[in-house]
Image (tube, rainbow, N blue to C red; front, side, top):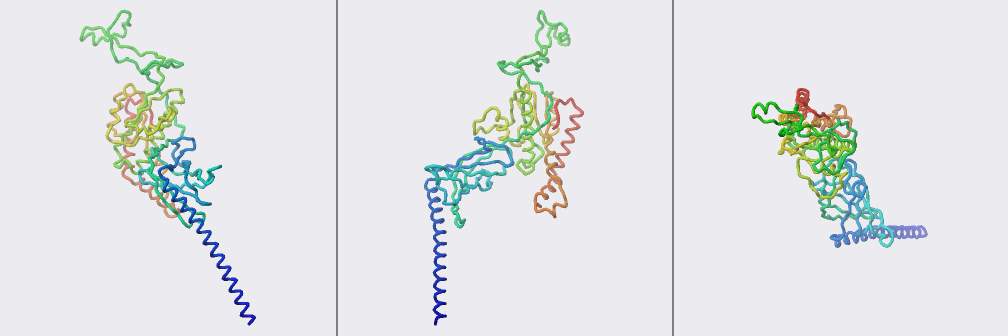
Length: 412
């Protein structure tokens, strides 16, 4: 009897202990569930007044350098789950999603239960304008048992530009400014009216008389010489994104070459600016002015809105009196020949295949030994692609054309 009484007592204690544990777990899970649900419902009800604030590049602006981009997102006026957190994924207008950004920091003072901000590094490799379609916002409890998700539409946008690199640039002679306002320290020769003519006047140099015109028309005219102008303080820089070699202008390889081309153009302009020269930058397409930028960031912003195009050729640029025209090796050899024959003062040709050839060095062993087989297959695909063969042939033709013509400029 004593044995059965003791066994009954032990069983009673075990049941009581199990009930206590079960009740504790239910309370623990229930509190997390209810609090997270309340935060979620509060956000859904007040969704119109709660707008995520995004900061790109950690400099207080909506811009940054492409690559691993530091992003801070704050969600003011929303309730943060007790000991839990909120995750936000950014959806872009292309349908792509960013990595999840965790918000688990509290505000101070009276709003101590309101979420402050969250930060993370997001891989955004393209030098372009990113337009945000919306945010996927999830409320998660502290045990990560429950997740309540909602969607918040947005019209935010930001742009990413290239990082600075050291690129050697040849000396470029500035052109005369349209308005003679700001003088420079040293007067420079500018492209004057040497090829234009004017009637001979008293005091003109007789050595500049064009005798061929006199023999035909019996009129005395002279060539007007180049002049030394103290207002030659800026460089007119025209950039062409004309591409006739790639069929798909938005493919992976076309996008990679576009990023490299933008890097070169961006840094060439920066190096010209370092020579204490102003750059009047132009591209062959309209710029999407969705944000106000200062003069220092204008080149990066204009490049962020540019894409490959095959409608407007490089020779259609309104580049009167230009100092620099920059083209890629994706331009046709006929277009480049016409451009050189026009006698443009400086032409910069960017060999866009160099970037892909350097990045896509295929290693047959890695195809079986490395886990990242997709990247190796991508390298192999580029090495065997018809686009690469066509591009290499075009670049060889460009080098032959440059060596056999009166080419002024450089190949980068």
